[in-house]
Image (cartoon, rainbow, N blue to C red; front, side):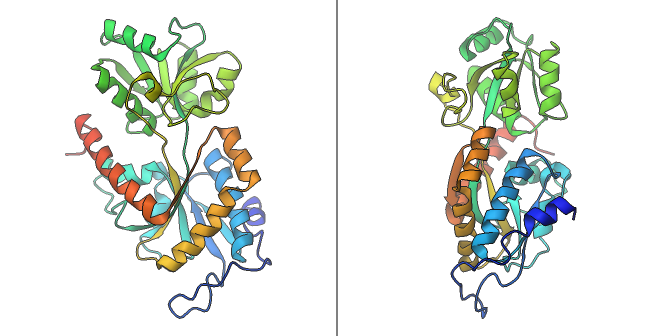
Length: 323
């Protein structure tokens, strides 16, 4: 663990604990440090937000929150580590949509993304949007879609990869409209946006990494896929406001090993729920255009069970399920 991780993760160790929970013979939970796995490299937005949460939750729990970064493998190393962890609440991980989707795309992954995990709390999501170059002729999403329909097979668009939330959101829209176009996958959002600015693609379906370029007048944001408009771009409509029944929030939160005691889940969920609503975290979400999407563990699990089947059907229709 690097110095920054240790300094930020151990805040809160000397603070009075949350109300004790009598669980399986324990007088209280937690009575030792909790290990939080973040399945991304240190320093990125997904890492930064959870470090803010970890510092605050540690104070509420009265025990250190030890942050461990496990980057790689499309962000599923946290979920994989939970398969061998004790379900006592002392090892938990960040949850995101790749944890749900990758077992559908990769037959070598044997964990079930709903049945083999304990869902603790849904916390937030991500703003996905459709962007074009500032000089592009399309001022609205319907104009872009009309052009695509009039020119089948001639438009190219990019995302950070095949099977990504950004990719599937746009494919949903294309299927609704019966469009024929070409998807160009890139290695990340930054690469996608460079390709857009360079004229390699006509538009991009990406997360809010485009925000600074939109504000600088280099890109034009046509619509967002979220349930509500982005706070920084209140004049830009949501896709569903334009008559397309598509909402994509890409929710994420907190998970633990299969079989966690409901009382332990509640202690952790309550601490992180409070942390998520503190001013410092809310400011972070606003700066990243991320919505607060709180759901308790059972509701989060039920939502992911429904989403799993929706994703399975969409991937089948796109011929992306492995044989």
